[in-house]
Image (cartoon, rainbow, N blue to C red; front, side, top):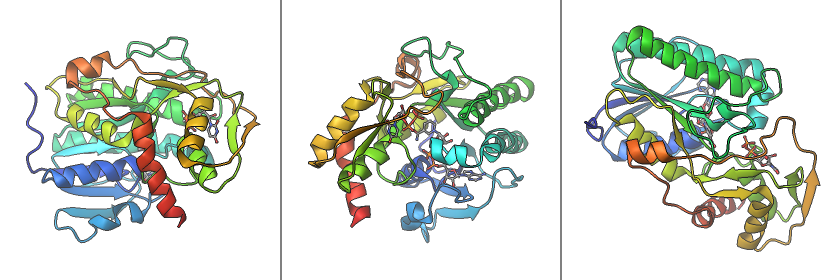
Length: 318
Ligand code: NAD
Ligand code: UDP
């Protein structure tokens, strides 16, 4: 039986001032929930939640999840962690700490107050995958000592912690493996491919393709992701995941660049830059499990999502 989720509850969202977290909070507030947003504003911004400040069912607490937190809530979404390669490589030790110590603290909280907790994991747990598309049963191909390892291995360790807390302490866990997501409120200089290409196109700058642009990604619009996260939190008792949440339509990075140029009407040229180390060559989720368990699949095509994203970045630039 699916748990009734859309009833007013007090929900904690860590990383709630970030790109995904702020959209998730919008949906929770719209559904009648009371939301406590905990964020240290490392990569998030007050601007993402400015429209909620003063709302009677919204509260913001500036706090680092690496420190313990004592609050009373009825569900936890654990999203706190820098997500773009530039941001998570800026202070790699802190990145591992957020995933590991932050997860221990949030799992400890879930254990004390006996509430479900959802972890925002990532397709990066598959590393540079040798299986394509990736199913949840694939264990991954991850470099443990590279530049991306602080994020990849941190998130893998967080998954381990979630499953050990589940087996050892009976915590109700839900683990989402999120694939590349884009949309309004992405940080314009976070270095991620969608924000980079759109900003470069809008400024009339060259579009920087890392490597030859033949590497692939599958891009999920943020509203689709948020719907998946909400369905996962409401999924039947005992369903833990991990479950892939992403858009299975795959594009090369060169195709994305050409689409952005076409849609913005920019005159930008494509220029090649060196491929960062350990950059995955292909990525595409198998979402059979999400379809079966959550009755979820993305509904927003890349072109449609890019219209809204380009509009957002255009407004920022003005
Ligand atoms: P984001 O950087 O916009 O948001 C992360 C938020 O966490 C920010 O508001 C940041 O300030 C906050 N944060 C970081 N360290 C913290 C700490 N120690 N204590 C409290 N808050 C802290 O990134 P996002 O794209 O919104 O990602 C949200 C979550 O989803 C992350 O856990 C990320 O790993 C995961 N994820 C995102 C994607 C994607 O494509 N966006 C893909 C896979 C996984
Ligand atoms: N990328 C690119 N140009 C950029 C930024 C990124 O070609 O200006 C490439 C990057 O090398 C990777 C892909 O786009 O192959 C997706 O990069 P992103 O940082 O968005 O996410 P991730 O690598 O974590 O999937």
